[in-house]
Image (tube, rainbow, N blue to C red; front, side):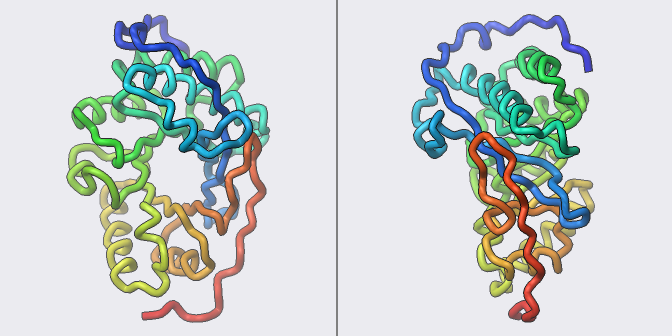
Length: 261
């Protein structure tokens, strides 16, 4: 993909500059079929590894554009230094839809960073969360369509929680849905959770959307998700985030006990 000559839009230029620094940790998304990382999600951290909350507390409506842009740059540069180019894994970057004024104009710095680091742009995934209230869902649909045309993957994070749920999915369909951890927690012993996730599995297959289950912490949860046909998984059971590094994956064997009915 070539870097376009588009200039930044007025909204991009007029936002406040970022007056603080931060870094990234990485957590793998595991492909259960291959046993290898499908992607690494970039997670905001302080420069000394502090939690995301301390960084996000400094983001304001005035500097959110600069923060969103810097997140993309920091994620790519840090992942490349951590060795992601030595793997076939993709890189998943969280973005703020309300900070994207023009999808093609606002992506230019990301493209330049990818070119400078040698990171293939077709290995980029952009995640957005439905927990951020969207003032203009049509604008978000336009971002998704533009990113798809440019060869990026898109993912809706925290599906099953937040402002819009199924209504949001009816308006536009990303490439991936990340199931909120509230649906995953204790799914091996919760019939309602399994029935709900089973329904989402059927729906996503009809729509051609891949599912990622996040927040997996127990072997029982992993076994239940395997049984439901979930291919991609993420959580502490697989690997905890590693600060400025790609963590090793430990995939436990499925438990022998049957899943409770």
